[in-house]
Length: 396
Image 1 (cartoon, rainbow, N blue to C red):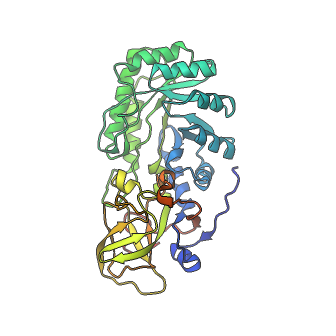
Image 2: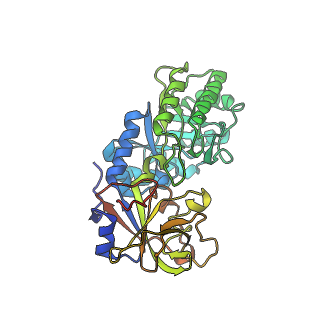
């Protein structure tokens, strides 16, 4: 079992406020929710589940997923490989960045025993062969470009080989005596299960054209989380679509189907508690922003649910929209979508922001001196009631 991470534990976010009165941002981890979501993926996805560590690498998050049964981790840098292997020595790491420094490949292979890699160019294959010596049970997956359907982030501009060129690369992987695989990514926060079907069909065309045995098919991430004013299909619809396409294929029976969930696995496992530093009319200045935990509100236009907390006074039942501004001295540090909060929100109040388990702490910067460490804190929340797309009911 992984080493225990001791975090202060509270029943509700209100208890955090009452006891700590924090003037710093607080991540409220919902470990039971993380484990519940992990078990849902493990029980329902028709294959191997790899957690995308870049989404949230906090050790308490990794612990919760491991304790729930996640044993495979999508690590896209040497630092992530080291983090997982040193903290979870029994876990399996997959080096899933298509472009890796030779030194990182060498350390991952020689020190941490990594033997699964992804590429999208023959020069990357040459690096892996040179550094690791080729074959001998190692796995190399070829990442291909696939059609994009209703994804918030389109990822094929940077990575992926075309379906026309992929068969030749797959043959080179096979000729180097690696176990072969095909991988793709439909884009982050994908709202259409058909994207996975089209991706699988494109992969099958590549495999047929290559004419080599394929041991792995990785459908990547893209499984959506529930954000404000966003209604993607249930995860079950994605799993069913993937299973149907995979089951109808003519792949070898021992071909391993894999996925790499990130936000769909952990977004709901954390909320962020911030404090209002100033009110100017319908503007609220808070102590976190787009350069820290809330970058996805800008880059991905994610609308996050929010609710006001102040145990010392009765909050009005009247609501209005507020523009939310972060702590830095930069004009870009403004959330593009307003928070709908009680009309009497003011300095000293706290706001709990939901669905912040994904790409929050992991994407934070130190810009303008506003670092998350040590100015932020992590807490455990034992209670998991009522965290969804809206906090207006006031439940926690």
